[in-house]
Image (cartoon, rainbow, N blue to C red; front, side, top):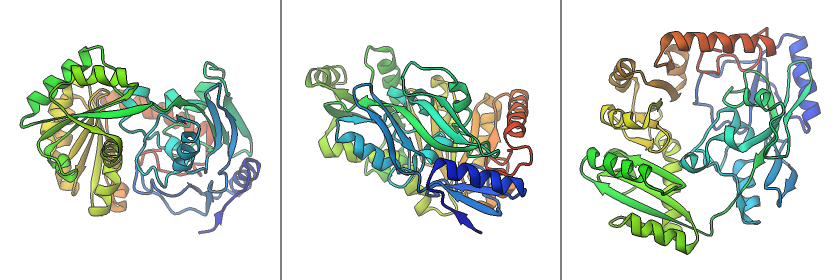
Length: 386
């Protein structure tokens, strides 16, 4: 399969136009960290890589904004900003290899979603290339700018099925002076949920708050059900957390950083150890997280303040009970990662309201037809449906 590595957004746009004019199918790639994610990667006539679009385009430190090429490794972006005491408040899995464009196209996030939101909250502008050879600029470099932003939001989570992200503008946050993790371990899930509820109802605003099942905790050399609360701020702020979260195990410095790196990279580590492994993403209300964790047969990690749970299964056979319970209780479930044979043959999406799911995908299909009427671009990558 030929691979085209354009050195500019204009060159990429022309490559798309040229391929589309010949009705060639096109696959989009960065560093391929999402190759087991969402729908199957079908054979294509041409692969276009964004890896050379890897520059920092504009940085306004005082305005807390930055613009970067889609092929820039996400870890490099964070390293650059850390030198100025700042960060992008996203901590997606595969952080060391993933590109900015890949993170956004897959709409990835991590534990910090609790404190800062997802990519939709942090991206203030996008540029993308269409199959007609045009470069579209959406949003801008101003945090409060909303002009055209909805067009850019269509690309977040689209898995490259509509157009190709060429650059992104981010809202930047200051790095906290210090971070600390407050870790609670319990023998039963009820106690974890009770503690979580008390924190949610308190005045505390942690950066991250995750629940780990015993099987997940074991991978981190811990025992029992874990509630991990991460706070950032001044010594006075952290002292207040320490008082309010009395009885917890405190992790500081490198120990704090290592713990959250393990949590963030839990899925990549699981998939390395389990080549046939499957990872589900289950979205529920906060109150229903308890039922999700109880129904899971494999290790799971819940974003305890946002209602997203990741369940890790060793094979397709483990999915049936979760899928059944999800249908009964109205949870939304996506097969987030799976081997090629699973993604090519199985249903990858279960919505709490099937009629709503059908109408949603019908609308998305219409949008796909507007951007890509011949279905040339990353066909099937949106969970096998688009």
